[in-house]
Structures are given as C-alpha cells and as structure tokens.
Image (cartoon, rainbow, N blue to C red; front, side, top):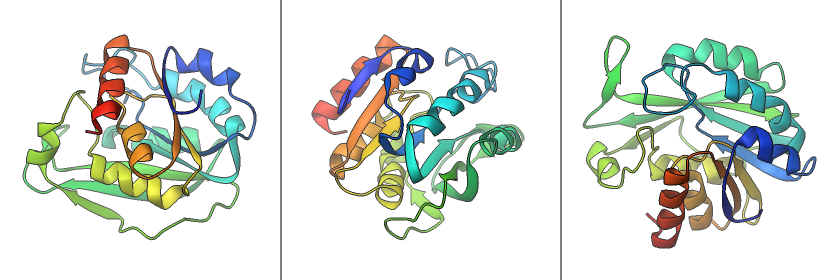
Length: 207
C-alpha cells in the first residue's frame, strides 16, 4: 500500500491497514454541506465512520489533521474528540479571492489538528498560511482541492522524513504530492476513479 493511490472506499480499505502503522493522518473528507459536487457530501456520516479505524492505525503520540467546513466545525470537533485530543487549528488564508460561503464569500479554510496521545510537532509553523488564489486556481483539479503550500506545511509540521502519512479521503492527491515533495511515504485512498487518475497524474508531474 505504501506510496500508492488506492481506488476504493476507505471504510473497506482501512481495515486492511495494520494497527499502529501510520505516523500521521492528513485528510479532507466530504463536508456534509450537500453542495452536490462530491458523492457522500450530504452528511458527515462516512467521515464519522472512519474515525475508529483512523485511531487504530495511527501510532501512539501522533497527529490527526482534518479539513472541514466552517459551518460543521462544531460537529467535527465533537466527533473527533471521542477518539482524539484536540490540539490546534491551522488556517489557510486566500489573499486575493475566495469561495462562496454561508454568509457571503470566505477567504479562508480551517484544518483542525488532533492528537492520539501526546504528540510532538516536528517543525514550527504559523497558524495562518497565506496563499494566492490565482496560483491555486491554476492547478485546481477538484472542487475542494487544497493549496499545496498549505499541505506542505502540515506534512512538515506533523510528520518527519521517512514517515508514512495516510489520507483516507484523498481527492485529487494534494497530500500525496506534499508527501513526495517532503520525503514522506503516503497511503492515499479515494473512492472516485476520476480523482484517482488525477492524483496519479499530479504525482507524476508533481503539480
């Protein structure tokens, strides 16, 4: 499974991953906001169902990082803290554009950081990462694709070189690209064949 994009349902694939074999999880699951762009986005159920195996496969004293809609942050924290300790929140700020949100346009998106045990960061990072909307749109291949600069920071802060990062909801493969750039191993699971193909192409081209 190491350094592969696995096309399948994470709820079926994750039980095959051995206990305590993953150094960090960074993932961007369906947001439960039902925008109609992503299968399963009508609720947080699939993500909630993945938490038990996420906890099982993580090594002791490691990080679990998850993107979420601002509108669902309370539910995300409430469900994640049934397994993990809440640690922090990191923000990606788009300095020259935004996306339509609940009350207008949003210029940022959050990543909530949780711990299994008492994890230690591997490097320092600011809690706000400023990115360019223009640069992000140039390489966008997925409706909710995250900026590679931000994911690079997450990978470097919450894992070490040579470690393995899991992304159960890989989308177009931003976590995998960040891992390959930073000399980490990755296991990425994505249900949609279209996005698996995009992820593999991005890794080959390192976009």
